[in-house]
Image (tube, rainbow, N blue to C red; front, side):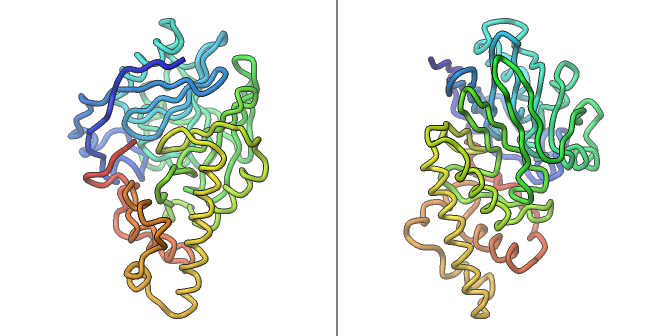
Length: 316
């Protein structure tokens, strides 16, 4: 079954102010035109759907208990997200999820918290609440249930398990596993088919990301369906390729650091042909190599990285 509110977003991305701080209200956001954005809903498996619009991919559990939603993109899209939820859930009540899980704190995944927070119980890792509060998010947008390692919600006939990946994309990442539906939402620990953004300034690291993904690969069923933070619905082999890209580029950059090469020199030499097209997404090849260099060498974040959503980038 496939429901579509047919849409290809061509809206240009927001700047760092709305993303790295998690703020849902900012001058950049106020200027952003979301009128062309539509929401596409795809049935994944069991009770689980994926919504694609502008920002991070949304996961949805829809069934007799109501709706549980994973991430919520940007506040101006809330009504369009509600319309998609009504279509998926085939009821007016489906428009207001009972639970809202945040995979991390970035504003393209939590920007709608303030819109849904009155009706939804927001759940996230402890560090997500801390970072959203420090960034000025209103109380209604803050998680009211937090966890450090793992948490389970029993909903729509299955266990939905959230578990923490330490120091991957950020220091507050959570993966969401719909156990009976056999679907995993990985948030921004998985950028399908493209170089990822690793938020070093907010606790992320390339080695932590590689370890976390290896842990997933060691434990998930071979036939699991995977919702990435950005990119198309994926399978284990897609995640395995992504993990190999990360480990190979880490090894390459580490070897060049050991030979005394600078980040600029490493960027100039580029990546192997296999990964040459991966820089066409949010993060260019040069930025990815610089991220790996800074993460391995303990460097602070570079200039304001637009969470990979700089001018001209796609949010799909």
